[in-house]
Amino acid sequence: MKTVRQITILGSTGSIGESTLDVIARHPDRFRVAALTAHKNVEKMLLQCQRFRPCYAVMLDTESAEQLAKAIQVAGIDTEVLSGIESLEKVASLPEVNTVMAAIVGAAGIRPTFAAARTGKLVLLANKETLVMAGRIFMDLVKQHSATLLPIDSEHNAIYQSLPHRFNGDLAAVGVSRILLTASGGPFRCSPLASLEKVTPEQACAHPNWDMGQKISVDSATMMNKGLEVIEAHWLFDAAPDKIQVVIHPQSVIHSMVAYIDGSVIAQLGNPDMRTPIAHAMGYPDRIESGVSALDMFKVAHLDFEQPDFERFPCLRLAYQALGAGGNMPAVLNAANEIAVESFLKRRMSFTAIPTMIAHVMQTVKQEEITTLDDVLRTDRLARDVALEWLESLH
Ligand code: NAD
Ligand code: MG
View 1 (tube, rainbow, N blue to C red):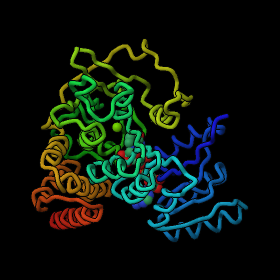
View 2: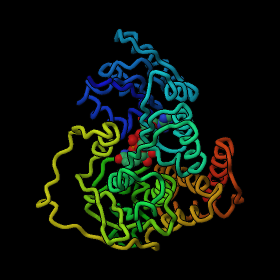
View 3: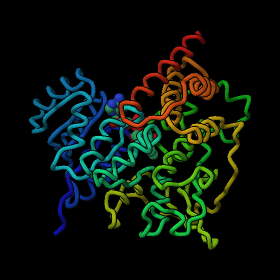
View 4: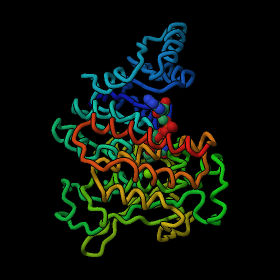
């Protein structure tokens, strides 16, 4: 008989969170939801609690937690409602839970994701920002507490699937020469450069292939998402930056590739639907149904590849710079990017101001080494302050 795995979903009301619940609903014999968490979306959380009956539901926001608690009582559901960051850490560390889906967006996900690693969980990592901000510290923590890390980001999941089973962190030992990280190029891959100044949040969020949360959609339009993913790949696979090559592949059918010294290139293909990497990581080492339709090669017909253009996508260059500089710089890059994206979404600055703001913050914050989570959080706050000051200077 299969043992039922207890799972906590951090960020259950988001795009990854909902896809995770969709996969779970297909396998009631394998998974049981122990805890769900969200920021403020009471309505969606209530529906999820009604359907999945978790032991805990955490709303980061206190007022939202109060509203949810009332609604849960009225609905007669046996779910305990909690609030605040400590509760997010608590449900990521529950002794009865062995699997944690880390799907909060942005730096807000770092503390609960750390809590999951510290308590030796199987961490399904969608929250790439944790690795960008604190790669070395987080990877050391995973090792120290015998946690297991499986990548959910489609590219990294594809790389994981394209590596041999005996891969243990040493790419050279298994004959890998390069990682080819594919990118769609986003909605502005072919737009005239001069038109980028005036693009709207709606246009930036209309991704040609993937349906995702707002932040990652804007990151895809600037290609900062690929920059963050280069840093993520560096830490996950211990790959030197010059061994990670970004390849624009507009169809998003190849989710990434691994090149070997004998000339072989192994790729993972599929329809662009996050339920595939989610099901892969949740079922691992078994293969389980995800609800994703079979890939129709005749419909795909063409697979195209292009070099990325750093003039069009300066954010990608900034990410390589931050990775090369090391220390606090990736955390500075990430924080500045979060403020930049939020400011663009609130129409307080233009799309093209995003890389300008990030470059300014990277030049202003002093470069230094970071060794603890507190150092990372301090860097994050400082970089956000510098970004906000720069924004004020615009108005
Ligand atoms: P989303 O915006 O759709 O959902 C984010 C979730 O986090 C929601 O449940 C929200 O309530 C919660 N949240 C937001 N702010 C919070 C805060 N301050 N404290 C606690 N919870 C908070 O985002 P998403 O697209 O699902 O992305 C989630 C993560 O997965 C991101 O790190 C993203 O980069 C990564 N990812 C997403 C996709 C995708 O297809 N959506 C693909 C690869 C990686
Ligand atoms: Mg990705």
